[in-house]
Figure 1 (cartoon, rainbow, N blue to C red):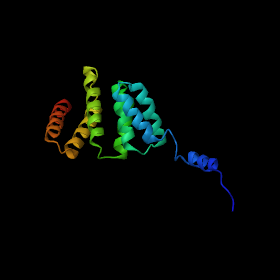
Figure 2 (cartoon, rainbow, N blue to C red):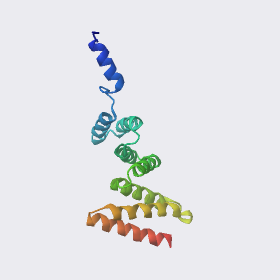
Figure 3 (cartoon, one colour):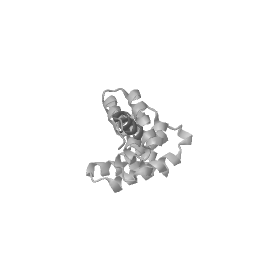
Figure 4 (cartoon, one colour):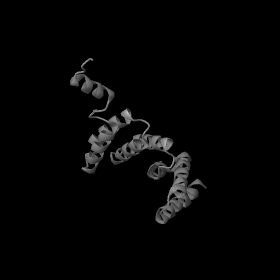
Length: 154
């Protein structure tokens, strides 16, 4: 019978990721703590690393998008939130954040060239909020945004 060294077993486990210190879940937990402390750039780095390890996790993309929003990196926030929605179309928080980002982009555009495309994207996201939410206040808010966008698109 062959003896297997405990070090060989531990090395195999480390290579397999069983003891990986930087698992996506641990990185996300650390990132959330950093964000709660107001250390958004540090949180961004951790969430970015977590997404690299688990790119199919919609929640990681969602939280990375929120951190980008806090850092005022709206293009990156939009990309992360779009990835979250693509992975999980029922992720209400992602739809709501995208709706705000698209609507804000449309409202901040120069007056003669208000991009209707951004309003249309916002409209789609607010409609998703109405469909997915169970909160009457949130649904009412989304409907008010939809009415305002409809006026802008006339």
